[in-house]
Image 1 (spheres, rainbow, N blue to C red):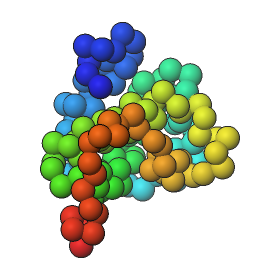
Image 2: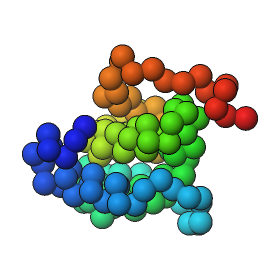
Image 3: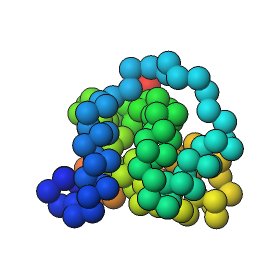
Amino acid sequence: MTTELVRDPELVELLDRLRTTGAPTGSGAPAVGDDRLRALLARAAEGDLEAFLAFYDATCAVVWRLERCRHRDRAQAEHATCERYVTAWRRAGRQPATGLSPRAWLLSVATERDPQQPVDDAVEVCP
């Protein structure tokens, strides 16, 4: 997904912020519980971008690790991470119906990745 194709100004802002944040370097933030994450997603589902960015801050390290394991190339992992969060932004209101914790839901969110783009073998990338 490119910003040029996005017409929703909130999504453009989200993409810009995710891109300027870059790949997480570690989990320096204190752990955030599921109740707090659910509340942030509920607010995000109503269009609260700041709540979604707080959700991102609380969950980005685990998503980054997943995408880094899936993709050998750092740029592909960054793109996949961004795609996962854009998809999560669009589907935030659906999380409660899944019965999954917010983190499990986020990791299960299917992105709109090109099916022709191969995903590297995680065994070779992740120790």
